[in-house]
Image 1: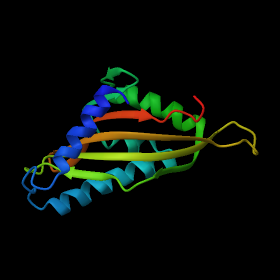
Image 2: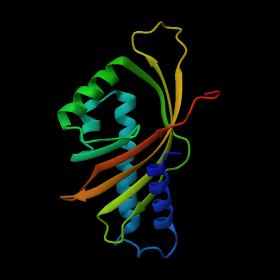
Image 3: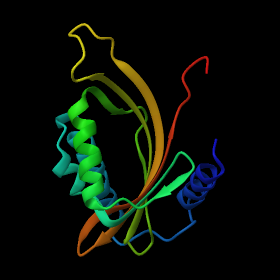
Length: 164
């Protein structure tokens, strides 16, 4: 496991310990709001809806993946997801375990720890093409801005294929 991911996961687990932080005002409502935003990510993927997905991202979104730090603009994200959604059809984009959601004591930040199974086929593949499967785990950081939860950061990993 990559050191940055280990750090983030350990930090998340510490924050999730009972008594580690005071409960956020109306924490259960905040967790439900963040869970709803997380569910929209799935809907956007299954429907290949770029604009729905982009509506979740903050303008200053940061991505940690493959040993790099990226700060894609909204237009760069639109281009990337338009190409991706145009090239694939999703069979699954499902949580393997319930997401772990932690809301900060002041109710302005949240983390979501995810393990996801993705099964897809290429859009231009043969009708009998074998679906491709991958398992990902990631952590998302959400910030409440102007009354709305926005995705501000994500660190992602992909499980190695068996036999790799």
